[in-house]
Image 1 (cartoon, rainbow, N blue to C red):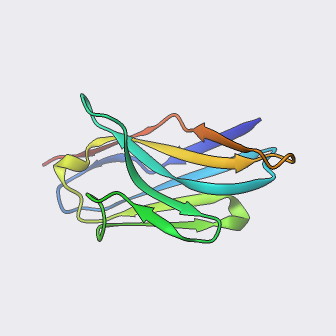
Image 2 (image 1 turned 90 degrees about the vertical axis):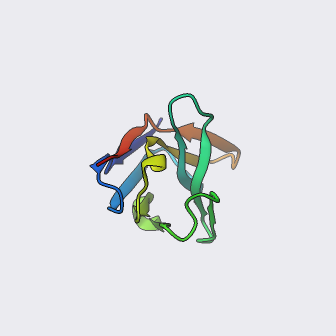
Image 3 (image 1 turned 30 degrees about the horizontal axis):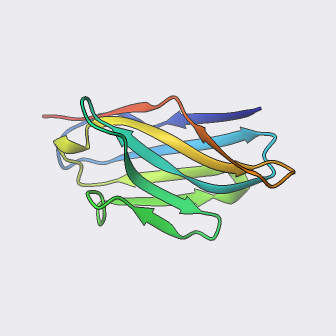
Length: 120
């Protein structure tokens, strides 16, 4: 019913930048929240950034002032601009979607994940 298409991962040197995107499609009545979590090997999944339909953003403490989340509501797409990347940012980044169907119930959905590697 719902699909998330993620793109933009890859390898970059410390101090570099990457941009992730995530597009939601399917029988979506409304997109409530979109964003990303990440998980590094041996660590728990942690919040990176979320943006709600009012364009209010929330960031994980470790990425504040370096990452910026934005969205294009017409395309059901969220973007994550990642600047000043550090080796500790290396992880699988999972797109997260909180959406509603016509009954207005809130439903969580996760993308498959995209690898981001920061290394010299």
